[in-house]
Length: 237
Image (cartoon, rainbow, N blue to C red; front, top):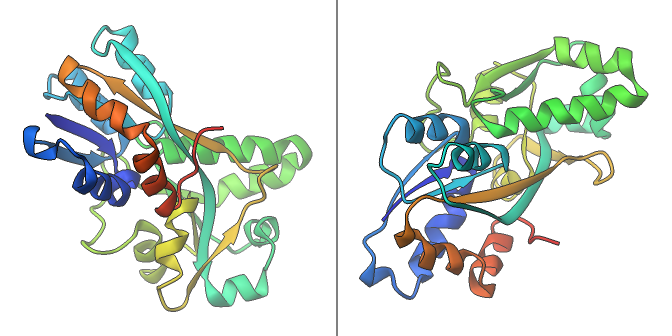
């Protein structure tokens, strides 16, 4: 069975596969990447049994094209901000940090990577109460990773780590669950975005062949959901 999955699932999915009771009976291979780019590969004919996206939109497109026969949400995530420890000390509030006039903001690429689309939704929420500020923040935003033509992130590094340490951005808006890894990195820290301001990312699977059903069901079981939470995700409410 071949799984194509959002890159943000790499750690959790790898752990889940090691616990999958029927792993010996099912040879499973995985390909990770931005969900929008993976979806286009599937549309172009790349073989896939199960597609795990960081959003609902891309699986639904495969359903509409009769490539997938079912979609199911399986876990959630939200956004968080990574920056330097110095900037976090200077601007301890997330919106205060984004508002700082000289700060360059790095994000993933919208349409290619759902994380970039979630950032646009975050800006839309900011715009409701602070329209001028939202426009100003957007003007300082750079789509630096997760796109068709984006540079490859060096092996062993997080996108946020690489972009900040290479001075391509002063902060990165990405997925909240990475805070566990960022906490172990020197000179970097995360700032939380309050839940009422944040965006919920609903990770959704698209079942493409019948052979995916056993593992797809396993992802919804208690043991798998527990592993997801250990990697910083949140269970469906």
